[in-house]
Image (spheres, rainbow, N blue to C red):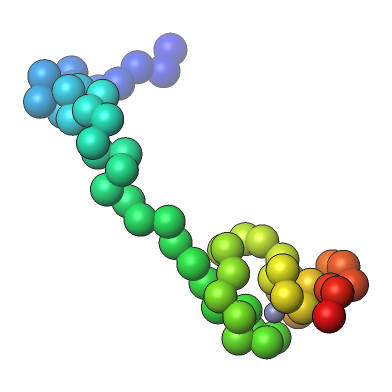
Length: 61
Ligand SMILES: [Zn+2]
């Protein structure tokens, strides 16, 4: 059976449950290689509609 090798210490467990930890990671952005616009990573660019060099949708001008 899949089992954790070690017991998670109280401090690690409590850190995971702490709500302030989740706020620390800032929302990330990446740059569109097609038009240079700032976009969400792993998403098609909202401006030109390209993702991974392929056109996903027609972007409105
Ligand atoms: Zn783009």
